[in-house]
Image (tube, rainbow, N blue to C red; front, top):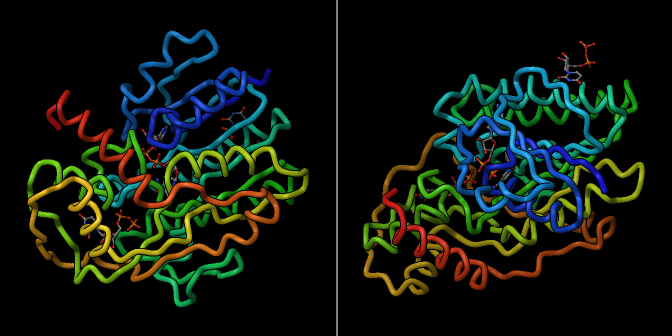
Length: 315
Ligand code: NAD
Ligand code: UDP
Ligand code: UDP
């Protein structure tokens, strides 16, 4: 049995990961400052003797004894990471230094939740891991994109300089139950709007694309990466190559919710990437991983979650 630290463990992905690690028979230390995470996400785990929650901000040092670290702490949606952009960069950069310092002292493995945002608004399509990206250093998304890029640099330098055992995962847009209903991401926005009969807010002409991965597939990829062969560091793309325009996503969600919502076109935010789609050959080869849940199946499960949530809570 291992004792595993999950930072950002009460967030969307983190809470699913904690569940998975407990199911595999581990002890889990969930560390979160509850900035975007919700206690409700981990409420059902609190009376599990193998689960411990600690409220802490990873931009401050942390001295604990664990066997492995998954570093997921960082707000992920543009609305949240732009709310306090300086704190976003601090979380990615100083947070990474602290967690890498911890991994170095304990001589343990550490996985970084990086992002497809390191590719910025890509000029190469689809994006392989070798693509170096097209990112603004000064725009409103830079606190997140550049913070995550710098965190990757720190991971690789701690690996080269201090022999820390690292695993770097580049996550493409992931969705599913426990997304924050107000976090402004496209899947949660469209579903909540459709269920409430409100206008569906399309930014720009809706022709920009994203590739959406269901949360269970993401967690499987993350677990396989952490347990991949020694010496395999990544970075590795984990995402679903199915590519959809925002217009097609809206139409799918309206159909699956039987909604009467109408489309409302708003302006496109600054630096919004026009297209995104992962090349997943490396994950297939090294992790024997590929996504199993198609968009329609995943949306049906996510809609059921939000439908239930909206009956219980006013958001
Ligand atoms: P989320 O916002 O639901 O979860 C992030 C968690 O980190 C929250 O619980 C939040 O309270 C916590 N947190 C933020 N700052 C912290 C700090 N300084 N100290 C301690 N805890 C802190 O987002 P998510 O979708 O679950 O994303 C998890 C990770 O995966 C993030 O690092 C994100 O960048 C990455 N990622 C997610 C996606 C996606 O589509 N969901 C895509 C790419 C990368
Ligand atoms: N650190 C931590 N927990 C630990 C070990 C280190 O939070 O168990 C932090 C510590 O605050 C330090 C950072 O990680 O600033 C980087 O550690 P490292 O050993 O690389 O740097 P140094 O301590 O030499 O500055
Ligand atoms: N988007 C939209 N309507 C919304 C929220 C988002 O059209 O209500 C668009 C957004 O402009 C972007 C895409 O959907 O082009 C994905 O946005 P999200 O914030 O989910 O993720 P990211 O831009 O970080 O990939």
